[in-house]
Image 1: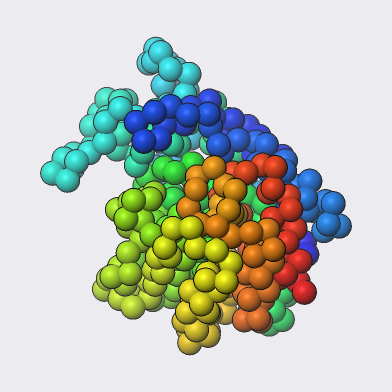
Image 2: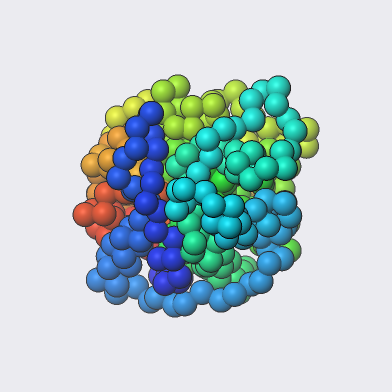
Length: 342
């Protein structure tokens, strides 16, 4: 398996994490990528550096105002004399509050969904590097067409909670969406299978009105789990995209054996759609020991999931999303890739 990586991920090192009314120790830290890379190297996978694809691919997914915000807000925040080192919102537009404010505090609230995506001095550079990792892995797979090649993008920060014009949930640029859109310059249609423990709300939002991208998300039931407001089975897409969005909520604490039938449901939809390229938003936070506590997949279970996805025999780009138990990340990614390749 060719693994794509960039050390620039470490430029994003958040100091703040706000959840359920309380500040916690940040979970999405550089040590995540270090743990993943250690497991990958120990398993003997080939690691290559990412290429720079320039601004066009991310501009094809995210709107210009949002990209300007991400690139400049840290510097402008400091210039405005804000007390906190990191950019954080303290207000968001409500359901009947639609105006774009001119002040910096309102701007931050407008472009963020929550307080779990603090923006620091190096966040923009790290997010751009992460999207380039996904694009490089995509290029590797496109180069192998029509063969069913594969590559793994070790992306950090993750991306699937980033909307066209909002960051949140540790995510800034939607890596898998940027990669999928890029692939459409060479193929007719693609699919995204999201197996992170959280619903891929940003990815769903980006492609919700389109039929050239099938989006499927398997995740812990969002009734009382992030992102709370999306991820329900009735969300099927709109307009041209009606029927091209599939959410499969899974009961909390579901383990290996009970998870597999849900994955089989997703596989049936993928076989029917027959995409030219499959993108897997690969979260390892469904792990039984993950601090975010959703599902109960074991290390061996990730191998089973990898093997089940590989049975589709499709050109596949694996894009890293969540996973926050750093003691087990190396073992879990190794298990998944072993199952996928086996």
